[in-house]
Length: 219
Image (cartoon, rainbow, N blue to C red; front, side, top):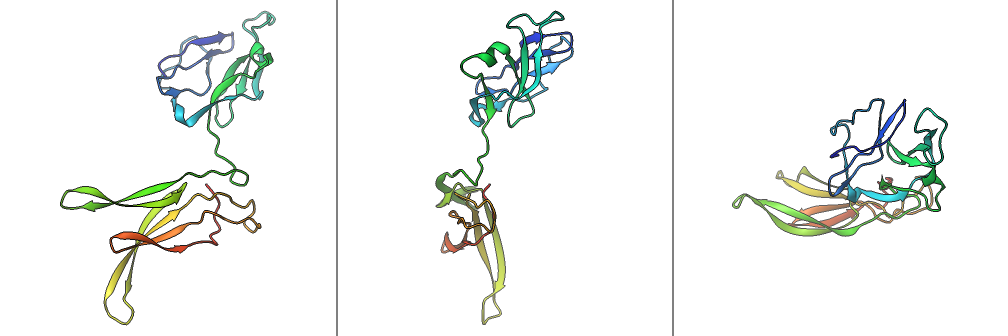
């Protein structure tokens, strides 16, 4: 963050709201027991592309904290409301919580539940091969993937059947993220985006096997 405006102060705690640079946002607030602003190195901001501005649930950590020693005057009471998916909180006044629309704060995008949601990006994963002459990587092909979670290259050495000559076969395993995963591995639901194995033949990768019975769950 670039700084910390102070939101409120009591005899017990000071609340500071971190200011993020352009393209970033900070999650929640920072509490201290002194009137000195926190160090900017204390927390880190998050790329706004990983966040969504969402209503906050009324899940309070502290409630009815007052602005001073006197009984809470109208409108000056506030609560620390826990932000889902993080270990921080949002400073929210009683007026905010009583408004017609729930207050909103930036929160991390939740990972979907694979048993009830689809989470897939159809696209292509490019393959490049190193060119020793140019010392650069040259494009070879695009491999169609389904929200791919991982690609792993590996080799297997073996003897050519009926000869004493050995050879090395080169493979690429593609772990597609599944569109739907069963809640129980033995359940009736089908895996509909299976892992795929490709082999390097004739200057490109070709599919040789699909693992239709792979018992893995979506990421």
